[in-house]
Image 1 (cartoon, rainbow, N blue to C red):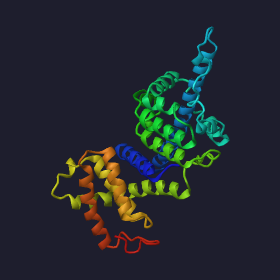
Image 2: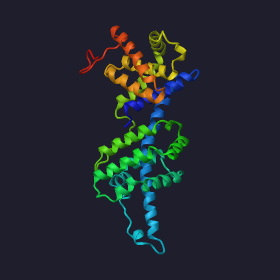
Image 3: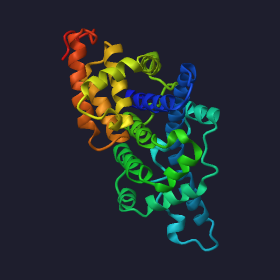
Image 4: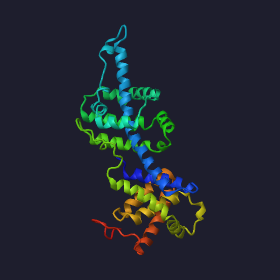
Length: 315
């Protein structure tokens, strides 16, 4: 469930804190990294619980309308397309999903206003009105649910503020968590919701090893990596280079050297994309230019050697 880009971002965040902190220990940094990754895993589940609670709130409104002293025809014959979404019904009854929710005590019980506001925004939209009047099939329902996440949940300022209040680890995670949620929805079919296996944060042990090794090796080789960068920016005032740009390049160098199974192009593209999130608008081109020169130097000295199918002599 935790993808490699998110792992790289988490390593960058923890590495930033490590470098800024006096007398930081490597072990405490690694523990902080694993805790940060776990919180992202929690957010994925919590945002799934959010849509369940929104649907539950919608159902409570329908039930209250039916109990009016003088209900209207519409009160007694409501459109239930939203509360009948197959994905939500199956998810809310999923043993593996509920096991994680209960074990980690993930809940929106203290944020009912957020639930209400989100429902009102969704239900008053043209997309909602279009959906409830359509013929219903699993594909239409999935398309609508994806739209709810991408256009309403992802853009909610109230929700963002709420998440910031709950955990400092979630400040930058919502977009990536929603991206993973949408992937889960797209992969699922009635009778088969493809959630992560149980409460496993990582797809496999390789991902966990990747994150820890990337952090540890970047810390241990900081002096050498900084020296490499400084050689390539001799026409620049090193102190004026964005601090985050330097950290991103250090991680990229570490990954290219220490992970022979990952193509150089993959590493470069990933860190250039990450720079768009965490540094200035011009950082991508700057980082790309410096890393291209460093890569050529490290290939020439055979410090970068790629192994594996299709990677020998990789350019």
